[in-house]
Amino acid sequence: PPPVEKYEYQAEVSRLMDLIVNSLYSNKEVFLRELISNASDALDKLRYLSVTDPDLSKDAADLDIRIYADKENGVITLTDSGIGMTRQELVDCLGTIAQSGTAKFLTALKVLLDNKDAGGDNNLIGQFGVGFYSAFLVADRVTVSTKSPKSDKQYVWEGEEGSSSYTIKEETDPQLIIPRGTRITLHLKVRNALPDYKGFADPERVQKLVKNYSQFVSFPIYTWQEKGYTKEVEVDDDSAESKQDNQDDQAERKKKTKKVVERYWDWELTNETQPIWLRNSKEVTTEEYNEFYRKTFNEYLDPLASSHFTTEGEVEFRSILYVPPVSPMGKDDVVNQKTKNIRLYVKRVFISDDFDGELFPRYLSFIKGVVDSHDLPLNVSREILQESRIVRIMKKRLVKKAFDMILGISLSENREDYEKFWDNFGKHLKLGCIEDRENHKRLAPLLRFFSSQSENDMISLDEYVENMKAEQKAIYYVASDSITSAKNAPFLEKLLEKELEVLYLVEPIDEVAIQSLKSYKDKDFIDISKEDLDLGKCDKNEEKEAAAKKEFGQTCDWIKKRLGDKVASVQISSRLSSSPCVLVSGKFGWSANMERLMKAQSA
Ligand code: ADP
Ligand code: MG
Image (tube, rainbow, N blue to C red; front, side, top):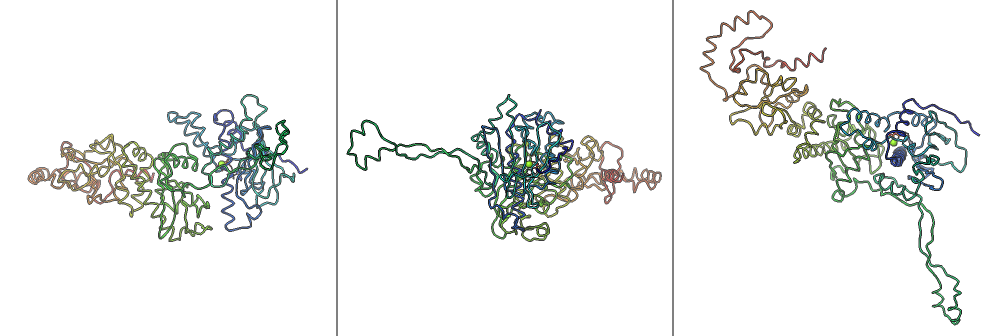
């Protein structure tokens, strides 16, 4: 017999398995969803790779998933004809936590535990994917027999619940040899008499679970089911009655049959494989869109909005886009993070989720969704994507749809939805103002700020403009590090007195974003902390100014002399009403706020 080699799990894996099995999961059924999703990933990988290397899939034709449940013995076997794993991949994938759903689970768990009021209970946690290890929710022994096209040998991984090690050996039983793919066998916890684990291997239950959890898997899933059909069988009719009637003819002999139900077992197709984005959007319910979102992106909350569309003409593609309800990296999210938010398909074949940067500008990278193109080549690479005219057009359309979707949230009757959106993704849009001049017209109406007349609820620029005084020409703002200090800025006095609304820019990025926009609806943005603030007709009293100049001109000169180079000039101003003096920035210089930011950055 070939040697059996023993390996230790990475420490985190042991801890995680313990956590999963012993404390977190009340919903044990999720194991099936996780294993099917891995099988589906493995099939996706194979299908993609065999586009360029058809030899890969020559051994076994069908790309499918088969689940065999043996209730009698408490065993479930799940087989896929996907990419399989080499020996080394077995060690890397099933013995360590890499970039996997498992790693994501740990992050999510941390967020939940830090944030109990968000509902950090078992139930919520139960909706996360924990990947492969969820097999141990129901099984005390798991074997994974797998054959990769990269290797000529098939290997068997075996692990037991509660053990800190696992084994790998070569598969030698000729009956268990598969041409390609992975077979996972779960030995259910039947020795543990308490709950009825055998029940998980009930074929009907498996069928229900598959229907429930895997309706968006795009490969056929077959389950082993008992079936029946009725057939007529002839029966020996030796009743007294028939013996009397001996002269019976053909017609009467026919009556001597009866109907019986013939039972047999066979594979039954259990899911629908038509991808949801190929369906007519009129026939898909919101709940179906939400469910697709949760299942595809392994999320537990519903999206804030979704948009399903088809474009035809110059380029043809279908897409479903989503606005997530929360920013995965928290509000201070750095937009440079790589995401796997856009799943790119070419004619239904999953290509990659690594391309999102090519399809959306960085500031919209939080948008999630699927894009299925008709015009790209199947062996599309990043280089092709970057240079393709088709992709440029797709990107334009996708961006437009994303903006429509966000605008939709902002127009929703439920103001809270947009507040939630803004709280999570406002920063992204402000970054957009800086980086994407072309879309200023779409970005500006989506911005929200506090103001001197609305310190608790943010307002839009449209609301500001509506509230402008008849003679007011510009949109006034003051940049500061908080509402309190913005409110106390002496520059504000005059404007408050005249009841002119002033936007409070309190986030570091705000000022740069506003300056990039320059104006909104032909109204310039004006920083009220700069010199020469001109309040236009709202504020002209030349007589008074001349009198003040006469009276205080010499005082100004004297102050300038005393301060020397520390200030550029000392001037009489009409902008204050109760403070005696104020420090302002030069017209072309940095604002005090900007200076503060630059200092913080260079420190
Ligand atoms: P994730 O699926 O999020 O990566 P999992 O814990 O579910 O995390 O799986 C870990 C890894 O094990 C997968 O990324 C994959 O590389 C490998 N794997 C699991 N199941 C299969 C399978 N059926 N075929 C091929 N590889 C698999
Ligand atoms: Mg997985």
